[in-house]
Amino acid sequence: MTAPTDPLEPAAPAAPAALTAPAQPSSTPNGPSFPVLPTDVHDKLVQRLRYSVSGFVDSPRGAVEEADTLLTEVVTRLTDLLAERRATLRAAWHENDAAVSETEELRLAMRGYRNVLERLISI
Image (cartoon, rainbow, N blue to C red; front, side):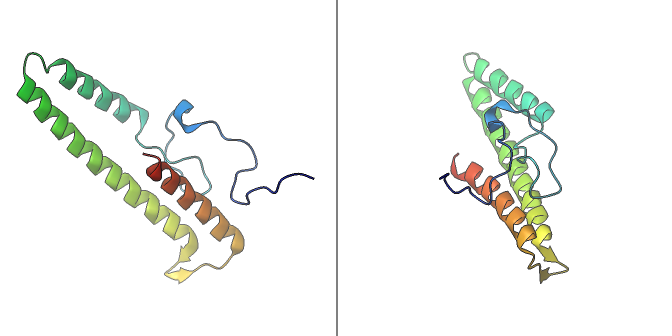
């Protein structure tokens, strides 16, 4: 006898999030994992962080100020991304402010919420 499967899991195994490149946000809750940051934005932020860290020896205060500015920008981007993702998920199970009762739509919405929450909780 086989073990029961989780009804919220995708049918095919997904690639680990750390090994996949960020994709564009999905408009459906059952799409790929939402990206934390698009690849080009991620690369620019990493470059800025490296520049800040490497500049510490010559200008400690300037390096720390740049790191502080960078953290503020990242927090703002993540907050905006999470708000957009929540709106997408909520729209998937609310239609004109009336709750959708289709089990499949609710299952897909739950998968989307679980995806976001698991990623946030694991930070």
